[in-house]
Image (cartoon, rainbow over all chains, first blue to last red; front, side, top):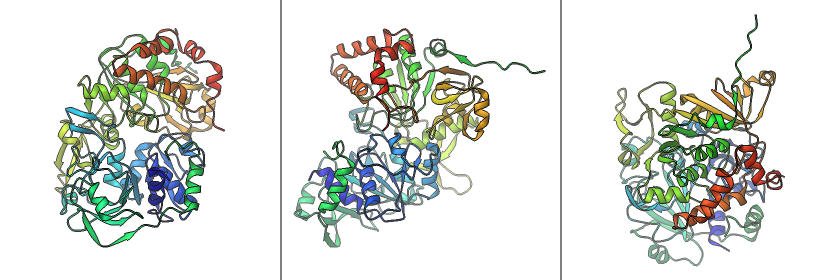
Length: 251
Length: 298
């Protein structure tokens, strides 16, 4: 089982039936497609390029958020401006996204490492990520768990999580939404409701709380009760692998 | 008395001459789809320089190609890359890191808000997305302000008016009525904002065909219509063909080598696909029918 397979399966389980998810291409979209096939057949996908309600075909995963394949059997093809408006209007339950750098408040950086004006590494930019992070009713982040990604403070806030905690997101003018969970290769992280700080909520089988701490660049809290996730079943993995037989995203 | 309406059809060679040094140029589509490449290649070939490129929100490798070819001074786009093929455009990344281009940092919402402000001739429009981010810190054109009615913070986004918008669509009639297959992505916003709009299309259709389905007409009154079947190649054109992944990989290999210091492959790419062919038809001949006809879905 590869890291991407683990991420996609655990991420897919976060999605509830009969809800709406705005998913980025790659692991998030694969996870959403898997959820539709298994436990959430009435899940509505929204894709950035102006696509609502597509049915992604196994073996034909889109490689981009606006592809013809992404629009297969869609119920609506609105302009991108409307896709974003629907999120802002409150029609989208979950924004499902990745991130290069993430901090203890769930803020994401996909713009630049180092000083923006003289970046050590220029990253792709926000695309629609900030729109999702700011406007969806709830945001779930999916990312490999590496110390260099999980930093005390992101160099650039591309997409806001809980900002500096303690109600600062609401005070900034973002009156709704926020990041609820971070699904990683080591476990599932959540956020303390008061402080907005990240905490450990579940570990994957064979992973300890200490392992998660050792791979995180800041101090993590702990939920009152830390669960152990169910490992991906043969059935989940088989369906997932059928979605991406070329293993373009699964690694 | 019936007057003959003026046809707006021109060829890609003539249309591209409308784009001059130093202009603000928008390119429609979205990452892997619907970029007016017949015109982009022409702009490189005619040597246009110092462009402010308003890439699509989000933009693909067409903006990267223009940077690599030395045409660009400033980029306005929330993203430049090819997602699963390349998370970021090689020339865009290198030019941003080396300070060779200016960047107007924004997200997709701000980008469309700026275009809408231009279309409405307003000094700004407000947005929510952007609050709490670092974007206003690095883009001095964005200002956080207190809404005069509720006192709550919002981001003010100034207008963005391209001098010329390049759009690739499915159909147009000779009078500049344009219809897409698919969503049209963000192209309506470009057309509404820009001073001049040039549209390349897969097919020019009679005015009667537009009138049969007027609800599908997304743009009207565009300034020039260019007949350019396969005009988005190597990107997709919804309803017509998929992107050409082998071609994009060929480009990416050349671009990566170039930013690493060896421009040999990239110079060959430019010569083969842009400086060599005299027009769009010759470009398609260079790419070849077997490749072109392989780009279908199912």
